[in-house]
Image 1: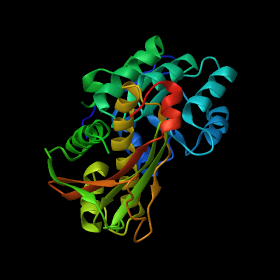
Image 2: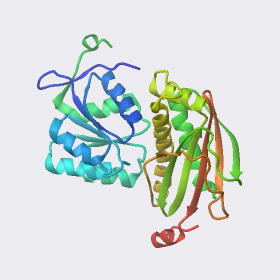
Image 3: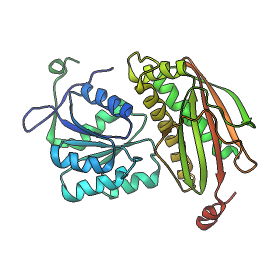
Length: 146
Length: 164
């Protein structure tokens, strides 16, 4: 897999921490591999919206990557609940059902961005940098080993 | 079943499979299934509900499923690995989700349910109202079948202004 210049937290230079929420174990593993290629750290996983909320409270990750179509509680509702309680939360929806109505609903209910599946690593990389803004720094190519 | 419902699935399968397998694919046979559905290997089913209702089954023989899953995982997976079945479900989710997104943007209002592993050897026979179309995609890893049985839900469509 292509390696990207590492994206670090600007406050302490540590890897960006991610919570991956998807009902598919396979999708979570694939997203995890992509995150690692950005120099990120997957600190938690959840397979449904309810677990995502409790895991967010427990882990307080820098970024949540959230699927939409999931059992128990769908991703948009989970994103809304997380952001209501934690306005600073950065939730990026990652879903194959990227129709306009869904995207608008997700953004209106607190998501910061939307990435269509199948995920292109270079697209997610740019989205992560955009969503983190000044809270992230990109390591130099030599430092990242890219 | 109208072509306007089918074309987005063909386009989505082309996009998802070509990207994941990093090689072009071809559309093989396109047939109407007259007999009861019979599973070929590892199959994932996705139900849709709303103005269009029905189900789509994504089906690969076990060897093809292992090869496709290995491509998507970036590592060799044995046929018996649970991740192979997970991969087929996720592949179905991506193809069908992308197609549903296009249809929703065209004005059809319906939702997609999470994929489930289809373990029955066979399924119900097609009827006049729920005829099934079988698409076969020729990929470098083998044949990928998509069995689509959808129908317009006329009451829901009329309520929102869409109709057959």
